[in-house]
Image (cartoon, rainbow, N blue to C red; front, side):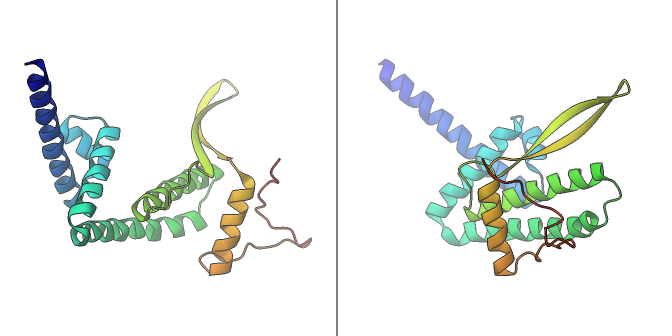
Length: 184
C-alpha cells in the first residue's frame, strides 16, 4: 500500500502546482510583477518565475495560440519599458545613475530573450551589487563585468550590421569611445 499513498501524494502536489500556476498567470495577465505574484501566492520570487515559465511551456504544448498572446502581451510591456528607459539612459546625469539604468535595460532585455527563447548558456554581461567604502562612508553601487568580450563584441557587431543599434561613435583616432576589452 505505500506505493498508492506515494502516488496520491504526488498527484496532490501536481494538482497544487497546477492551481498555483494558473493563479500566477492570471495575476501576470492582470499586470502583477513576479515579486507581487510571489507575495500574493506565498512563494519565493524564483518559484513564481518557475510557475509562470512552466505554465507558458505547458500552454504552448496545449494551445500555441494563447501562449503566443501572452508572449505578445509581455513583449509589448517590455517594449514599453525599454522605450521609457532609453531617453533616461541618454540623459543620465551621473555615472551611478547610468549604471543603474543600464542594469535595468539589461534586465528587460534578458526577459525579452527568455520570452523569445534566445537564452545564452552563460550571460555575456553580469551585473552585481557592490558596497564601496569611500572616506569611511559605504556606498552601494552596481558593477558590470563582461564575461566573454569576444562573444559580446560579435553580438554587438551583428546588432550594428542589422541596424538594431547605431554604430559606435569614434574619437579622433578612430577608436570607439566605448571599447570592449580584448579577450584573453
